Amino acid sequence: MFQPIARKLFAAEVFEQLKRRIVQGEVRPGAALPAERTLAAMLGVNRNAVREGLKRLEQAGLVAIRQGGATQVLDYRRHAGLELLSSLLVRPDGALDTAVVRSILELRSELGPIVARLAAERGEGEHHAALAALVAEMRAARERGDDLVVLARLALDFWAVVVSATGNIALELAFNSLAATYGGVVEPMKHLMADEVTATEDYARLSEALVARRAAEAVAATGRIAARGQAAVLRVLSAVEQVTARRGTTHERKHHRRTRPRRRT
Image (cartoon, rainbow, N blue to C red; front, side, top):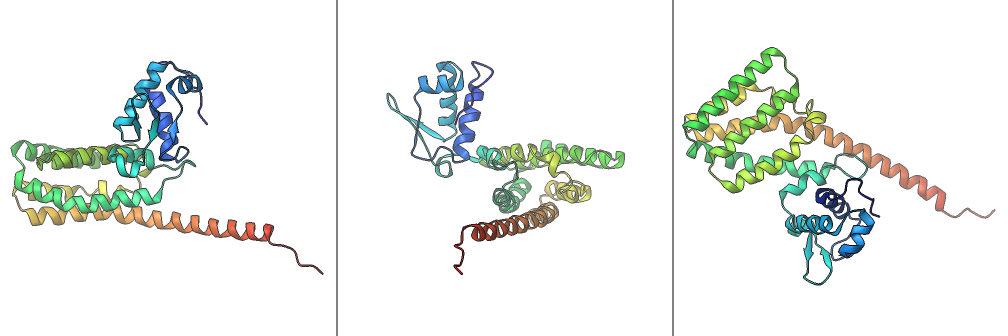
């Protein structure tokens, strides 16, 4: 079940391996993890590394450490935060989990208008200047023919400033989690997001609306930008889900043919 860790004293390695087992369902909610001494032997690390790794799991809402008792696995759907999204995005077989991707798109669509409205109402000169500078960088990057990853990173920087302009720490932390998740797959997804990250003039119009404090216009511009990327991603997700469904149906038919009893003649 557990694999020895090559580099000793790395609590991060303990955390990552145990987190992966929990998120993938190999250790179910309510189950007790092995004792620290046992885990240390199984993972090939000392108990301090195990103890620190377990503390990180507790902070992430994945386990409950009971003093003098067992460490119990929690249901991450009830206890974990948005920072877990990056671990859920890729399934054990290495494929993107389309349901998680859809969830992220839905969250982004719902938060977009809120962020735009608050940023228009609360943004200050420093935010406006930063947005103008980023729009100039986006235009220059497009003229140079820079890689889509460069434009995607600039788009993330742009949205970080917009979210900062809301003055809402909850939205900022939520954005950080979503950005970290997207940042991990920006290279393979760059072509899907091409329509969105190359829409430089849409970003320019959003920036102008925020500077002028035209909330309704900012909300509309945000929706246009998000819709560009979302349309492409949803097309691919639908295609992937159709292929997966066909494979599942084919597998079931083959299994049925193998297992059904033969007729007697």
